[in-house]
Structure formats: structure tokens, C-alpha cells
Length: 133
Image 1: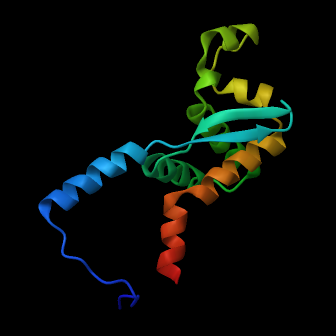
Image 2: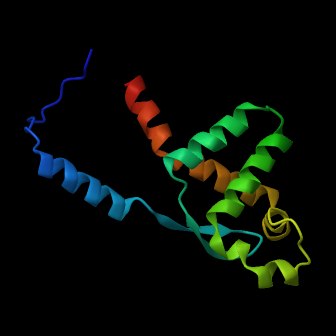
């Protein structure tokens, strides 16, 4: 049964739907500054989109060990922070596999805090809460 609200429904036109798409695409990519204690500073991360969150949740479902969760979060951090992909940075730390830079620059605590933060911010998580209510 649909949840009743005090919102008055408006009949949408074709142009309204097109405008919603245009409006959504402008706001689709979101960035956030995230503090990393080991680095004693903030870095810019692209907030994972719905598809990336589904992928991460699928990966998390494949294992229950903390080491597995850390590995999934490590990959997520690497994918969401463009500066970590810089060839100059990887060479400076003698990194050959990109994901490894995360474990060099971030503490385990940071990795879990950032991973958990992304999971909490996910649109899917918010939708799940709406469905429960």
C-alpha cells in the first residue's frame, strides 16, 4: 500500500520529464572532501553513484571477513579519488598495482571510516530506509 502524504500531485508533461532528466544530469556527479587521519588532511572524493554502490554491495556480499571488507573499501577509495591514479604519485611510492596506494596513504581506520561513510551516503541505503518506513 502506498504511503499517503500531504503532497498535492501534479500532472507531469513531456517537457517536465525532459527537464527532470536535464536537472538530474547536472547534479549526478557529486564530490566530497573527506578527512584522512594518517595524512592529516582532506582529499576530494567523487561520491559513488548507484551502480558503483550496487557493485560494492555485491562484492561485500561475497565474504564476511574483515579483510574482505577492507579490500572492497580499498578498491572503492581508489576508484573514487582521482588523485590516487596519478602516475607521478604511484611512481613516487613505487606502486605497481594502483589499489596498493590506498593502504600506503590511509590507515585501516581511515579505510573503514571512508568506506562506511560512502555506504551510509548511498542513495540505495536511503531508499532502503524509505521502503522500511
